[in-house]
Image (cartoon, rainbow, N blue to C red; front, side, top):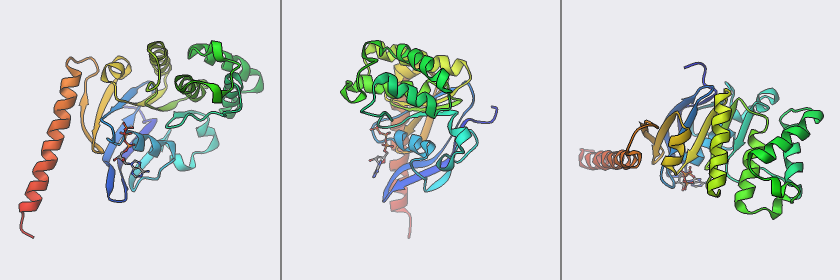
Length: 252
Ligand code: ATP
């Protein structure tokens, strides 16, 4: 692989006694879509927060376009997009105003910001709400707006946390198309999801996360993805139980 645009290298993180990430290593190269899939509490958001610079891992290294996400140089931040947790939108601005702001904040000129915002409205299907205040949007439409703000500058690296969790089927199709289009243009994408069939359509690689660990990879084009996912999760739980039993039985 060429230099990874997104990198987690041996990353571990604990919240007190709770281990959220356990030696996770993954790299996403330009033009690649990697999906993080796992049950509730598997550690997906924690991994993305480490890349968003919102959490300093207890151990290991996170890199965005070769830089520490906590101290991204401004020029690098302009080439990064993220929609992690709450959409980063201004509630008292309209949809179009939010998008123009996002365009300016991502380095587009005043002249380019308006057409970029208009194009983004269409790409995520927000035309009927273009003049609505963000605070009046439904949850799904707020999610569409957050994704549009994170992507309208066509970033070189993009992280999306459950980008379709609140979307209707039309929104899911639009976001899938948007992600694939960006990747085909060279964007490195790391996306978390619960939905195997959805990520299978856009991902080049599927990383299965369980109890903070990478417990295996799924071939996106493969069959019986769900069955193989649960087999990996079960095998990881069995290994963990065996290790605990061996530790309990070993002499002090
Ligand atoms: P979901 O699919 O439910 O969003 P997830 O895979 O994104 O889950 P995380 O949110 O990364 O999982 O959580 C991983 C683990 O870390 C969980 O056990 C969670 O309870 C714990 N955790 C996450 N954030 C905190 C926090 N701020 N304080 C304490 N524990 C936390």
